Length: 352
Length: 63
Image (cartoon, rainbow over all chains, first blue to last red; front, side, top):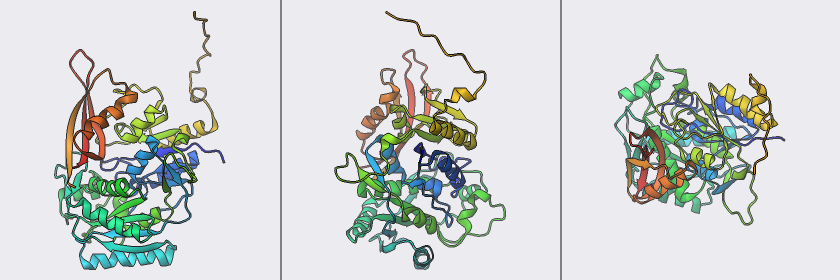
């Protein structure tokens, strides 16, 4: 089958109009997957709390590993299933922990996902959210070693992919959370979520994704549809388990004996929101001369091609247009042939 | 290991081409710790005559 492998990025925690909420870029991912025949994207795009979807043309790769893939450090290997282990933060209250364990059991019994085992961290990992809500979402955890040790414990038991569930401060009454639920702000916890999953990817090199454990929150009748997937049920774990269930294996390059389904040299394009050209994957793509498709998708950043002057960059108004460009690239149709006015071909002069 | 979230200002001199920008940034970040997550969050053209650009980088470091 003809494909044009494409990386699709919606950076976490920058308040994107599309993809800054609860899996609200998933329909876009399906569109770009159809156009390209092969899409590599990350949990922030695919995870909609209790809702998600599998697509055989989509590679689900955590952000840190996605950057490594773009840099050419790893390849991706398709698998039929992952053996998933779950790390639970010991800061999670017992009732919420039991809800999560029942969700995991449900994913085994109803979806046939291989959720193998779980571990509770020896101490709370302790989230610290950056309080400045005017900026992009960010923060840290106080006990990263505790998190990594728990992951090592699962890997020793034969687990091949890791879901992480951590306790977040109960801030359901905070202005940031209210604004986010009404579709106007930045997801206040997403920056720390990215740090947590990056730590597991960096130090354990397995597929992983994160779900926050939050106490149930009061009904909000002004809820934005884009945040609605996080209002279903008691946990955000199902989308993580669905995504990880057949996430590709990470293969360190150069690979000696491992079969690789997708090599980084096959990537042709990167789709990224306009103004968000400052990430590592995009810069690595520019080093390789890849097509960068910059899509109007309102967010907090203003890192644009004005500062780079990168020649292979296409600025488009929406993801429908991006899909058209990917299709043209896939079919080998030169884009100028579709635009008007159409210039005559150039005459070359002999130079000395 | 301890994590810290830092906003770092870095001058991007004209001598560093776009193709080398990522490695230039990482070399500077790695002086401060093991890099967990980073991105350029702002760029400004400098008012000097050398064409230097001012980068603002958000980074999470481990030490």
